[in-house]
View 1 (cartoon, rainbow, N blue to C red):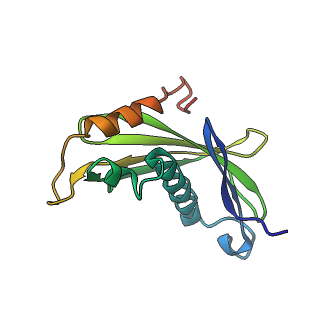
View 2: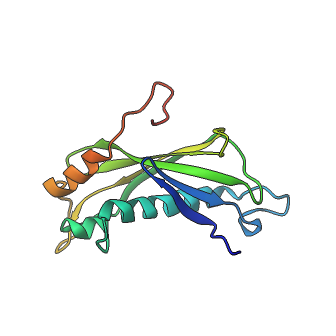
Amino acid sequence: MMRGTEYVISESPFIVRRVVRWSDCDPAGVVYTGRFTDYLLGAVSLFNEYLAAGARSLGEAHGVDTPCRGLSLSFEGTLWPRDEIDIRCAVGDIRQRSYDLACTATRPDGTPVFHARFSPICVRRDARVGTDIPASLRAVLSAHATRPSPQGSFS
């Protein structure tokens, strides 16, 4: 049987499972730091597809583009070949023109691996200038928003 290395295991809450490949690791078998960003971007992409509800892209469904304005990642643990991580994604803060996608990666047993924040900004499609989040997009984001816990992770 063939298995993918990245797939959605839950839509509510939204969770992506990622399996570490040997090619993600250095010769000692530790995942390269840069691969964590790839894991995050893969999960964010799948979450955006889910939020877009069948449209080609989340921003396009609401008449805007949503490039990345910022990204932060805090490491909590190391990964080795064939390790599995579950990346939970939710909408964090929603501002006037930008919003946060809050992601927490854990091993299946709940051990933390990383916490991340991906922050898109809305730009007009006809001119590369910032614009307010459209009301329709704000409604979708609000429906999937969560609040940070005191420890800084998201629930």
